[in-house]
Image (cartoon, rainbow, N blue to C red):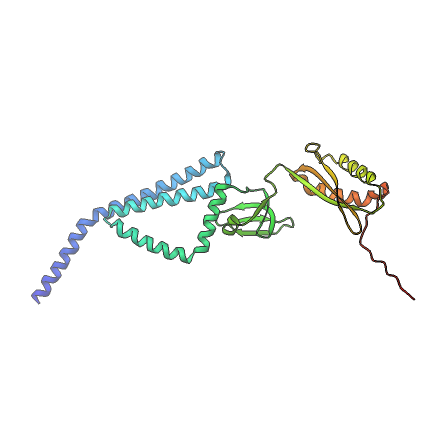
Length: 274
């Protein structure tokens, strides 16, 4: 019985000594934690306001705010752990092992995260650009850290993961201020080539959206089975591309007869022998 009392006394003494030794550290650590998190919140908010007023690409602002917040919180937590006496070597080893396990489980998510970082840094496109990637075409609505949202011409919302988007082929139709519009128009064998050139030149001159410089081009491209094909190329401002393309097609169809030009089409003659 006496031995049990001594054992309890020793146990209580150890708890008391532990409390006296670590209580100040624990209290100090909690104070630093709360103050540090409060300061982190203020700094993150200030960084966000500063970035919003700066000339930096606004699509980077949410990412940079999140990154600042994560880094500052990590510094606060590491500082607190050092204050209360946790061995940082063991902690780093545990974090490393946990990070490896999480990384293997979330490999796809991490790929999208890294892809988002690459897109935000290299800026192959920006919000408002019309792009084609991963089998989809549309106007960039939002660039987040994990995915990019497109609005298609028929008003569908497409969400593309940033991983494949950053590593795959991509066409940015808005990257350059000018675009070249290409057509191939065919006339019948026997039609007057000069009439064709006169008609196309007239159509081009009537459209103010078609630029004079760089100059357009008209040239015979192919002697096909049922038509003589000409390549027609002009330059326009990028936003005018589709309007010019469709209007020229309509003019060719409706006005070619005014120039004695025929639009040929494949046909088959059947001869019946009796």
